[in-house]
Length: 170
Image 1 (cartoon, rainbow, N blue to C red):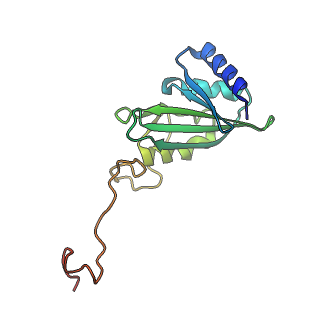
Image 2 (tube, helix red, strand yellow; image 1 turned 90 degrees about the horizontal axis):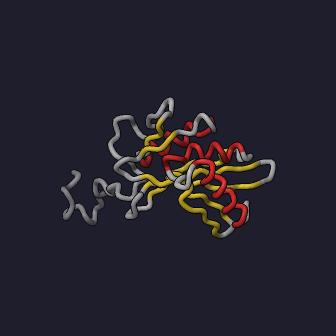
């Protein structure tokens, strides 16, 4: 895990290489190093980190920060196996334009995680060779892991509530 000083130096190096707007923030909380990247520059940032030795994409996942905007987050966990080092890169996109560059060309193992984030959160990974649903049916509408996804369904009919419910089952 890079310490706070090394994380700030890495963030500054990335800003110098890709512009001041490429890294929005760098946080070091509970021994976890995180770079908050601009979604437009996330591919360049990950490419630069890969060149620094972070060659293993341990995890790629999405999350929903409802009700904040930009709401949808994409998190990349990178490992440097030689130095036994870990860094997280986070990018957040708006729900109206949930698009970010695919990183399959850098990390081939990102194929299925990107498809899962697309399927569950609706984030479109531009440049993905086979972006389609992986868990839900192709004709399914909506994104089940978003926090505003409607919960519920049909009420369960028990003997104690069948008179008040939608009708008797017999």
